[in-house]
Image 1: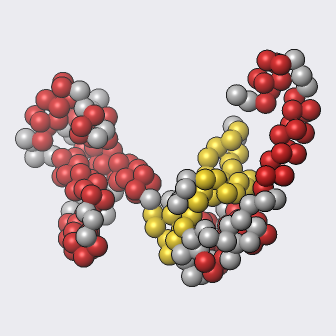
Image 2 (image 1 turned 90 degrees about the vertical axis):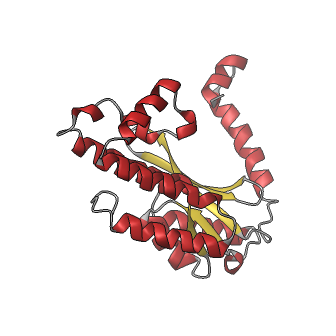
Image 3 (image 1 turned 180 degrees about the vertical axis):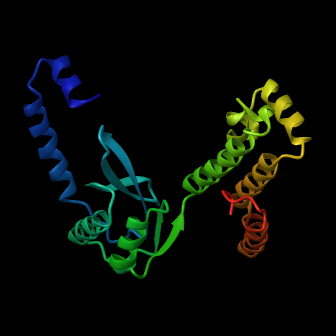
Length: 221
């Protein structure tokens, strides 16, 4: 529940509830020890209308939020570093950052945590891939009206398609469409994360990269 909702529920002023929450949150955070934290994830989320954001940093080993900061630029990483150091954390101990492909986050991590490696998370990689597939579809549907109103068929996980959508996808895949080629490239990329052997994964990604960059599909490239 929001603080406002709680205030109405217990017939109390929200400012008093905020003071109580603030007191105990600060008390708990004063005892935090980040000395063993080695891998973190960072992502932003909208908190208000009008492009207002907060960014969260999470300890990937126990899925615990360890820092929250306003905004989504490089200053967020600096804010985390300062707070991390204030709670017995050693910046040099951070070995891994997981984030989206935000240039601001990449820049901030490079400046504040130069020893850390960056991993782009699957969700954001596949989001960009889906956007590319949909762009190919929208461009092709201007000359092939069969593709109209098929957007979600190409974007959904194949296992989540309805029986009707599966049949429609099957008939479309029999056609010589650019969208089908883009879709197959997307499905192949999603399979990358199921490979556990690093050497096999590297070879797989290298072959996939060659296929994607030579597909002659500009959004995919």
